[in-house]
Image: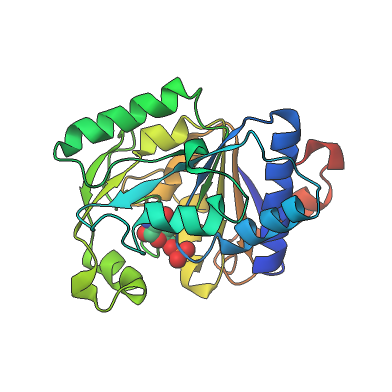
Length: 260
Ligand code: GLP
């Protein structure tokens, strides 16, 4: 696992957008797995700016969703489908045809979950999966004690996650209890996994995920199993890392040609 400590969220956005741009230059039809939440927004802004400036060709790029609420009405502005279309697909100038996501309104939700795993595989797999991290260490909506081998399935949110996400809704009671999420095993199938965390509220979860034991109680620690996992953190989110100086030295000495 590589840990990159950057000064702030904008620097993180530039760094990861640069990695995505490099990937798209090598593989123009790359499948980018995107996360929702506030943390990845600087990445999407930076990538869209590069596209507008003519530095990245996204005409064949594809985007896929990490997770979804169950039971929100079609077109609800806080469904993750709506969020990804608004924050990623539209600013990049992509169409809905280049977008893959699970069906959170399906009558047969288990079948919709299996269909989504199949669709990702048939699309050739995710080239780069961007992740945030919940304050309790979750990735996607894989709450603590999720199976580290899990596939896309229905999960029940913890009270803490519903409270964290209530800022997007009128109240915590309006946050759905149930969700569909790519499983941890599904996430680990991506060829490159990039976890971004910013702010002091994520410091404890980051330290446990990076330096703690591999444990289902900290779902993000599953990235320790991935052969190409990059954790990008700002100074505040890095505050709990015992090896911060080592990570800084390592990145400073990294040959530029290696990229992320
Ligand atoms: C939700 C999403 C996660 C995201 C997390 C943190 O639970 N399902 O994918 O990482 O929120 O969001 P934020 O970046 O807003 O803190």
